[in-house]
Amino acid sequence: MTNPLRNLDPSDLIVALDAGLKHTGIAIGTRGRLISLTTASITHTAEAELPHVMASGLMAFANAFIHREAIHAVVIEDYAINAPRFNIYQAELVGIIKYLFWHQHRIPVYLMPQTTGRSLSVGDGKATKGKVYKTLLPIMPEIRYLSDWAQVKPADTSKLRFHASDAAAVHIGFSRYIEEGKITDSFHRRSLV
Image (cartoon, rainbow, N blue to C red; front, side, top):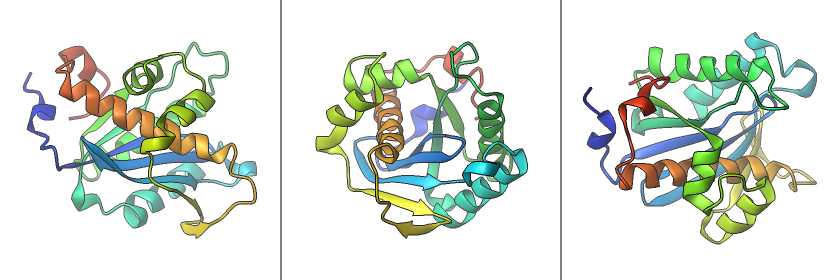
């Protein structure tokens, strides 16, 4: 199997997502630098788990927020089916993201386990969201908060910021994975390239 990641230039844009049912963390950057961090409210709480609502929110994200012609890869923090708080809609959400980016726009989509991303970015695969945030804070750009794709400043960002820092961990972990040459055929098993 030819590995398309070997063709990623250091200046190519990579988008990392901590895809959530209510809020999604978005990190955009090159292999060596985070450029933008965002926590976006994809759906409203009461409707968060309706697949068509998730799809319309992510469609707006894909088409309006990100200039897809500039994106060379998308990496998503993977979900764990056996996790204590697993929600089947999380799997549907990842499926919608794969569809939007790969099937509609032919942008490669990769999945990275949470423990791998955290291990490579902060040195602890089982790090809490708080530890990830504190560890990465010195290198993170200012976090933007979006609701209905308009920039807002929420009264309390204490929990919202963790979505963005988790996306940063995915981005940094993925970049280091590439740099260390750890990409194997098994990495592509659920990815779309």
